[in-house]
Amino acid sequence: MPLPNQRLFYLLILISFIGLIASFLPSFIAVWQTVLTLTLLLAAIDLILLYLKQPISVSRHLSSTLALGIKSTIQLQFHNQSQRKQRFNLYDHYPQTMDAVGLPLEVKLAAQQKATVSYQLTPSERGKFTFPLVQIHLHSLLGLWQRNTKLNKQSQTHVYPNFAAVSQYALFATDNNLSQLGIIKKRRRGEGQDFHQLRAYREGDALRQIDWKATSRSLKLISREYQDERDQEIIFMLDCGHRMLAKDDDLSHFDHTLNAILLLSYVALRQGDAVGLSTFSGESRWISPKKGYHTLQNILNTIYDLQPSSESPDFSKAATELMIRHKKRALIIVLTNLHDEDNDDLLPAIRLLRKRHLVLISSLRENIIDDTLKQPIQTLSDALLNAATHHYLHYRKTAFEKLLHQGTHAIETLPQELSVALVNAYLNIKRSGLL
Image 1: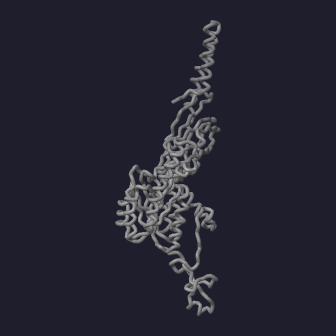
Image 2: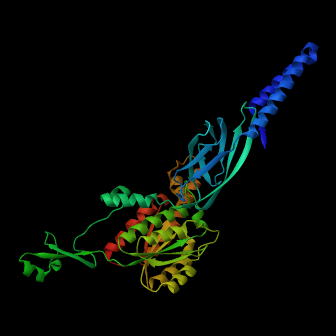
Image 3: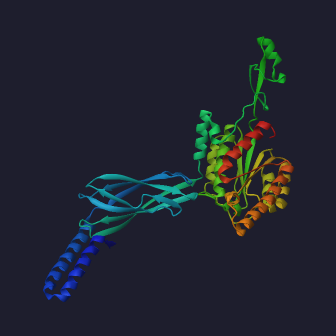
């Protein structure tokens, strides 16, 4: 359908002004009629020429996978099939859950010319999304009209959790600069459970490391070197309840947790372990522990569209289901947001899991708690809020200490620091030989 352009409105305003003058000065009526006739004639000719123009062909180019919260470039390629130059405004119909920078675009194309334009898009929600249309406002030759055209150019993409952290870890691991990520990987000779290699004796090696048979053959001291055990199993128990909906920055606690799962999965797979996943208090999904880097892709495809629900966490039910599903001893990493009232349900669930597995509880702490305690106390309301926050933290700390007294491994951290804290906890458990 045609749309009047700004230039046409200016002409109509001019005609109205001349008509106003003609109402007071009859000698201007002929001028007004002439201008009005010419304007209507030009507008009609311009409109006809607009519909005689050849259409613009469009194609959209975007990646089939995008990372949550990471800017991506979307490219649109145009081809002017007309023998005349064309000017138009472009509106791409992107999903509402994404933030775009650079739209709308104004494009000018010479006859038979091709051009490529781009804009930036940042996904704010995971899942499968469709780009349905490309909308073009094609300007007429005289600029009096626009022709509104909607081109059915469907494209689909999948928004995954932010796997950039995994790529960053892989890069730093190659360069042996893991400390820049905050990951502390201590190498301690002579410790570990699995035999790795024989090597020359070094000062500081324990006597029990010396291989006397190899020493007698080579006539020099030879030590055994061990490494952390491999072929162990890691299973994430992911809370999909309502508490994971909390949001302190651009990402929710749930999204930060998914990012941490990806990073630790990569690290565990590099260590030769098998990785699995179980979700509870929402949509139930299960991946049995498997080795190999294809497991990371399997986890990505399983969790990319997973969303937290409005349900409360049911730890006992989740623990019972996991004990039925998996018989072999594994490291169970429970990812949740603990409150003091959870102990009545959580402690029996932990006792059940510990009959067969080693359990690590990872609890998220809201940023607003720390921000509240940092605020200066100037009024009675500030004092009451500060006291209530300390009271809340006391009960939360008490619940956390009950887990530690039972021998359960547990960490509490801010969402932004979860990935590194979880990797460090895993590496400490591996070095300790507890699993």
